[in-house]
Length: 246
Ligand SMILES: Cc1cc2nc3c(=O)[nH]c(=O)nc-3n(C[C@H](O)[C@H](O)[C@H](O)COP(=O)(O)OP(=O)(O)OC[C@H]3O[C@@H](n4cnc5c(N)ncnc54)[C@H](O)[C@@H]3O)c2cc1C
Image (cartoon, rainbow, N blue to C red; front, side):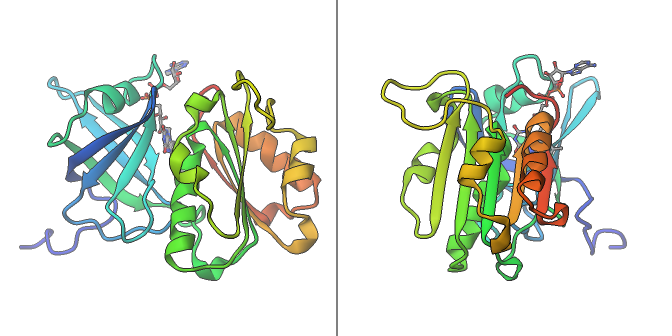
């Protein structure tokens, strides 16, 4: 039938929730069955559209949390006063349907041929596309060294805690906890700053590629800090989630 043979990635389609998983008290991963998913690359996002009974629609973007080839998953942080994220993290159940379109984005993407070393920096739910990159790196057997600098409010707010705690050859995960930390915590306890980046980031002379993702203020501070360390601006890829607080 004309019009249905080729489904573009910007065409809305109905996805069914396969399962939901609480990552932290305010963050939930939603696994989706998307019948005509064309496949995605590590770092891309999709759009979600919700329609209320009165026809009101709201659209938001969510990074894809799963690696290429894995079922599509998104990980959503609840903003208490938000319009869409409370529904996705509290109301949505297995079997429910939502509209999605994608995958979207070609710049904040990592492929094996892209190389490294990789400096990944995440603020809060900004870790989502970086998790897809980490999983994909393992999947393709890439030896590229990775450092993930991950800023969370507290240890309880660390998303993918078990997965990131498991040793992975060539990968270092460095946490900073900005609001509270467990007794005996020896890691960083402040927002990412130039001194922290100087300690954690690969030297610019090693030719690293950086992926920085999170709230807009986090991304801008980290990107500026990396450029200050000599990273060429073109080697610092950024994804801004908007003005949520970190
Ligand atoms: C490419 C991309 C990828 C993203 N990936 C993720 C992801 O993986 N996980 C994730 O959790 N989020 C992600 N986001 C953010 C996501 O799209 C939503 O912005 C987020 O879920 C909040 O949506 P909401 O409807 O709950 O909040 P909104 O209703 O949009 O509100 C957001 C904030 O803005 C404030 N606000 C709303 N309207 C106004 C106004 N008129 N004046 C002043 N303040 C206002 C609200 O109080 C709230 O604090 C991504 C964003 C982008 C652009």
